Amino acid sequence: MNNAISSFCDWLENTPISVVIQSVSWIIPLVQSIHIMAVTVIVGSVLAVDMKLLGVVGRGSPISGATRRFLPWIWMALVVLLLTGATLTAAEPRRELLNWVFRLKMVLIVLVCAVTGAFQITVSRNASAWGNTPSYRWQARLLAIGTLGIWIGIIFCGRWIGYVEHQ
Ligand code: HEM
Image: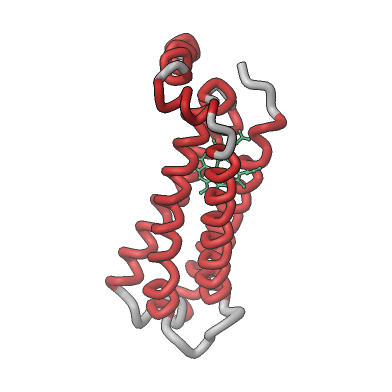
């Protein structure tokens, strides 16, 4: 498996696009800066939704207001993160694709996307009850704590990649 990924890295790091990203000095700092700015958009939007789910803010209002307002920002920021993250990966494929922390980060991203998508569909189908009736309240709290934990894990992994030796 790792041999196949290693061969893919050999090919990727010699493609014209990768060579350009590696050799033009301002591309990587610019892309890293955009990546981090998109992280801040995610953190703000996730906190807004999760504080509502935990009942810390907006107790009297329905959860659907918060999801309609903030979930689109989470999805848009994720697209930016995917594009900038793919650019950083194309520049140094071995550092990322052969690194177990990078792989863990990707698994956590897929997981949080699935949970967020399922949550969005559920809330749109049952907007009035979500988070306001007792039976939904504990589910809302569990969801908030779970997703906060996954997002913290993703951010931690993003920073940690550089400190782990790749194979
Ligand atoms: C969607 C796909 C994503 C890809 C392909 C991706 C890829 C990357 C790559 C390649 C790096 C550079 C790591 C290194 O070599 O040191 C990085 C850094 C980072 N990423 Fe992502 N990322 C993605 C999404 C996210 C998300 C969703 C978050 C958090 C909400 C995130 C947070 C971070 C952080 C905090 C860093 C460290 C930046 C730094 O130290 O300058 N990334 N990411």
